[in-house]
Length: 361
Image 1: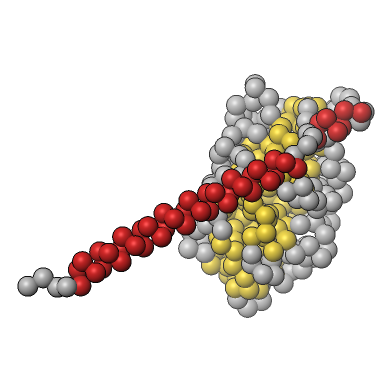
Image 2: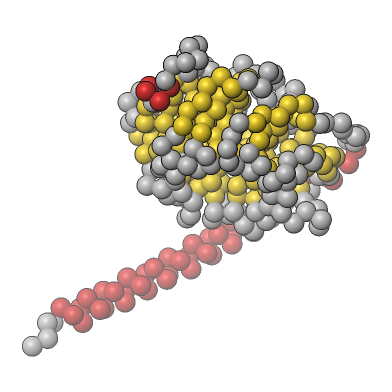
């Protein structure tokens, strides 16, 4: 005899599906209404406002130092606040701390996994954090004793369910923010390894993050494989703004120095600038001749220049206001994977799949 429950369950399922379809259409309608409202406010492009601004002229920037020592692709790097030390991580599983002036290696750690995709310097300069395919973020305290075994003092802080794509200390050494291939970002307490806040809202791998520059900044931006850039409130865990104009993965996001805007770089071969107060994209940095993806972006200290590393081995320098390219730099022999401007703005460093890092000025 058939159970009377089966047709009942089937009707429930149909009702559920109908509700889902209804909710989906409702959310799409709301989305398009929002877009319409946004479009109404969209009165003028950034480069039109900047027409009267003086052009920048030619730049002479060249490689001033080359850091050699990684045995495989350099995947990530970060500057120390002291403006001279650099930490870099690589596919060979090594994390190296360099003196950028002398090019000497000050510390080296071999991680238990290859593909160390993320590394960060602590604000105090006394520790570095790193991780990758081990799904973890580990913190290593640095000491003045060069011969000390750093691995012995390693602390596992963050645990994700997929690879670690980026990490960054907040304004102190005590908290660390991570993003992961599991589609989430998370804030952790370094001392206890406790999860303080998690951020859910991306529909695919999160590839990059950046903290708002102000001391009180309780927001950060993340970008991912869902082509979205999301701005988050660190205290509530809520996504407060979302931008979806890129046509492919967002590999890099970086706040404008004032904190009122951010830039993103994507596999769609463009960089874009989003104004947070206007709640929209205000500029696109692209040329027809540029067909390779952008791996990494960063602003000059004044915010007038945007440096972008590309998969065609070049670095393009953009005039943020006018939207024009002011320079193109050659030197790396494989794709540029990471780029950061030094804290005092006098130089920038790039890491590449050619196993080297270069300091440009």
